[in-house]
Image (cartoon, rainbow, N blue to C red):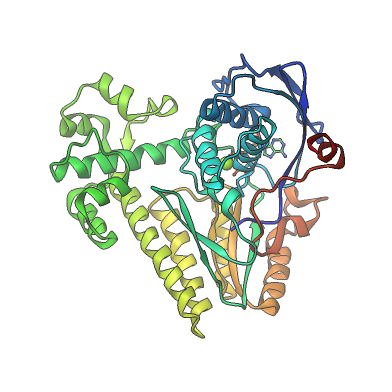
Length: 409
Ligand code: ADP
Ligand code: MG
């Protein structure tokens, strides 16, 4: 589901073939470049500059639509999504950039296409992301969650129990996903796990690098994929040397074709744990939808339980949690609220499910008291921006200002 926080862009076309981007928050420096010649170079340490997320969107739109005469633009960005906190501020910028540049260049695109372009082009920032965040940015609907599936991309509305209240709580620990290799290490481990399973079942492993494709090739259920993992990925750890021997390939081939630029030096891979997390989490998603459909009296309790299990798996099997996130989840548990980290992890926010408004108010007050008081990063901050209830909001939209309306007629 989409949260209430947004990235808002004010956009006008410019006659000079330049992209001028400004941020209303002046800690982010302005930038300009030529729309026909810019490069996105993200090699530097400390994470990419903020405007490069915007440029990813322009590059994605240009490569998709190849307009003969791309228009320059003047852009002011204002955002209130906590950055590097798992609520996908990065994808909000990239998706907004794809949408405004397509609109400005008069390229009509379906929401699904906009989402696919946004998912693909965010990878120019260096993270091998999946695409859920960009999908929900375009396909979100007010008042219900969405079940997102791929090939082709589609979103099915999931009506939540009427007492369900989601609360977001910020751990106050930021994690910029493009600044470290953590995120891509997990992607690489999943791809290796998939290829190893493919090799074990005598499929051409070079052609299959996503679990979903292997599942289709085998015509297996998720339970069968889980069993396959348990049987064929027995080791808790695989070394680089072991993988070279199993795949019967040379080191150069391994580094060049099976790793990413920022994971070239990784020596140890946990394939069993990552694959088990993926299949078990998918099963939990299916159960969550089934529980929502049945709308029984027990629905919220069951959903809370699934969220707890999800966090445990993210912590133990996928290893993308953080002690502060774990503390927030434990505090939630202590008052019977089910919670899990949200977004990629390694910091950022948790999402918690409360049973009714009363429970959510008590829960938020409890966190303010036990988590935020005496934490230096919370000093001087408005606690209502760090922990708040939220409900499913609409996806990306375009607003025409009067001047633009007159121009377009
Ligand atoms: P997440 O997507 O979980 O918020 P990422 O690490 O993927 O975290 O992206 C965070 C980066 O997005 C920030 O470091 C910053 O460069 C950029 N960003 C997010 N919000 C803004 C904003 N309002 N203005 C400028 N840049 C922003
Ligand atoms: Mg992100």
